[in-house]
Structures are given as C-alpha cells and as structure tokens.
Image (cartoon, rainbow over all chains, first blue to last red; front, side, top):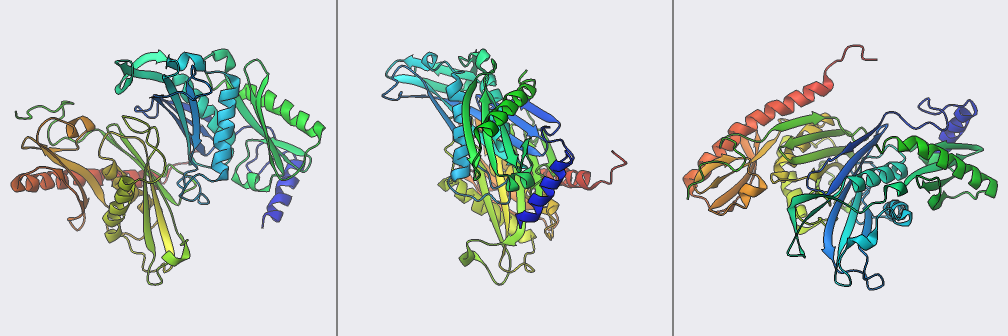
Length: 261
Length: 237
C-alpha cells in the first residue's frame, strides 16, 4: 500500500519538493511555543509544528534518592502516545514507540547535564527532588521526536519549585519563584534527519514517516557538541551518510533555537 | 457558620468563566475544547470505525466507548500516575451513559465510536467539562444526535445552593455536597446525576434546577462554538 506513496514521495524529492510543497530541509511553519498551558504543573509548554501539537508538563516531588547516587536528584521522562492524537494509537500501557520517544527526550536532557542534579538534593542520602517530565501529543501529524524534545526543554526552563514545608512536605498550592538549577549554556535540542532513497529530509508529516528508510535523531548542545544520537529505521547507513545526517541535524537545530527565547 | 461569600467572590448562581472551541485536533474525526475557570477538557472522537477487540462488537448497533484521562501534570497535587484508575474508569463509564441517549448508532453494527477526554489542567468539575466537550466533539464528527449534552456541577455548602464548585469549595470545612449533572437541553432530561456529601432533599431539588439553568447557558456556548467552526469564511487565503 505504501509502495505507491513511496514512489510519489521520491519523485517529488527528485524535483526538490514534498507532499506539502516544502523543500527537503524545511520545517513546517509556523512553529508555536506556548508556555504555561497547565497552571497546576510546576512547568508546562505546548509546541505546535504544522499540525503536530505536543504538550509537556513538569511535576516535582520529594523522594528517596537512588542508592547509587545518594546526593543527586532524580529525573524521569515519560511519554504517552495518546489515542486522542492519532487513530493508530491504542489505549493501554506505553508501547515500544512511546518508550523510544520518552528515552530519546530523556537522553537529550540527562546527557546534556543541563540540570545540576546535585543541587536537587535536600538532605543527601535521604531526600532529594525528583523531576518528572511528561510528554503527550495532542495531535500527531508527524515528527514527535523533535517537537517533544523542544516542548520538554521549554517546560523544564519554565518550571519553578513548589513550597517545601518543614523540609519535607510539598505544598503544591504555593509555588515559589525559584527555578530549577539549570545551566542554560547546555540547552539541548534535537533534530531528526530522515533518509529516503538518496534524499535527506527533516520534520516529516505522517505520510512521509510511513515511507522513510532510516532516521537519526541528533541532540545538540548550544556549543554545537552532540549529546545524544539514535539511529532508527530498517535500512543500514554508510558512515558518510551518518556524518552527512549529523551535519544536517546540527545545522537545523540552530533554526529551532530561536524558539527557545 | 453560613457560607455567605464564595471563596472566589462569584455569585452563587454564577459559573466560572467558560470557553468553548470546536475542531482543535485535526487528525480526529471530531474534536472540541471546553474550559471552566482553571479546568480544561479536550475531547476527540474517532469513528464510527471497526471495533477491536472483536468480541466487543455488537451486531445490532454501534458502540460508544469513552476514555477519561487526567494528564500526569494536570492535578493541583502530586503527579497523577498514567494509566486507568478505578476513578477514571468509573468516570469513563458515566460519560458514556451521559452521552449515549442522544446519539444514534443503529446504522453502524459492529462499529465503535471512540471518545477520548484529556485534561491538561484541573480544578474540579472535570467530568462535567469532559462531557460538555465530548458532546461538541461528537457533533463535530457528524454523529447523528437528537440533542446536545451540557454538564455542570452544582452543590450546596452549609445549606447554600451554588453552581460550579472549585476544588477549594469542595474541600471547604462545612457541610458540602457536590452534585454533577448532565442535562439534555432539548428534551429537558438528566443523563448524569451523582452526589457526594450531605444534602437535604429540598436543597437537592433547588440545586438541580440551578444546574438546568446553567446548562442552558452552556448549551448556547456549545452551539455557538459549533457554528463558529462551520461558518463559511470569506476568502481567507
């Protein structure tokens, strides 16, 4: 069924255009970043890219630290592919798609070391702040990886601590003005570069995602260094292709940075 | 002590500020958003489509299946663990019961109409906001309907009847009753009635009447939001 679609997408790319008229390396427009979409969350954000809409929210809690890092806070990223957002998603526990999405967002944030985890300790070894990031697409019209990473980062940057009473009870009703301990030089964004035939594209719509052969998600720090990579898709890639895709990823990330403000 | 002034200074028969929008989720067959104060509900409808798992198929008529879900970061307290809970499953069920009487699925044997309600931000009245949004989403999806469904919570605090309780009001120290109702504005019947708390019978009756009155206003908002989507726009390109 997808064979004809693939042929069509390839023919279009041969003429330097795509199903919706974009060029191969164009993002959809407009990209809209809305902060504070949930007042109850400690931080929240909604990113719209074309028709794709993703929400991200941060909740904080006081927990016992992991035994292997008693003086550091905890970070957890979860993604739910809401059946609301795509007729192909079903209710139930997260499938492998949702898990991959969550892990990619997680690695972009964790490996960049943007959060100073040590500063999340309240009483080392006993009580630390746990940062929980939830990413939820409302409308999946393609490219959840990049929209989710952007939404999660902006939500994280907007997050404030709730009030801590008697050193251990969280009063969620009262938010402080204190932001999370973030190193803003380590802002990480990711761009996923997709391959079909001899062409590379970014920001695919759903129909394009269906016919792609391989992809690499490239998470880049503000200084241009990489902090996470992931290859996906069923087709092998040559080293040259990989390097080319990484170059595109780094270059296109710069374009997304202007939405960070 | 009598409850003479509401915590957020509203009049007793005054609901929170409301906002309705239709057609916000392009991939869905029908969708809507409904906001009451700080409670926001999104609803998306898919179908009629094939029912899976197949043993749930009804060869007589189509099935309405509702899924109510609070987003993990939506609550005023701790993070809500994702996945169904006893509470969310019950609310899904009563949402189904509130909507089913107005929709006609007799022409869609073995099919299902899925309704997904998601709440990014909550401050009580979530099931009511969900039902109100879902009714608009069903209409947007072109499902045959006899009527819309409008829903609001009413209640009483220390004998004072009031509409659209916030979380703080539900938690008020006093005799509180919370009564979510769903109302069919056309046939003037109720499809949802729950109550928890303590209430006298005559106050319950007054509260339900207040609920009906408010639902009529919500009905106008719903109709306007639907008309807004299907308004023929001028050459906007």
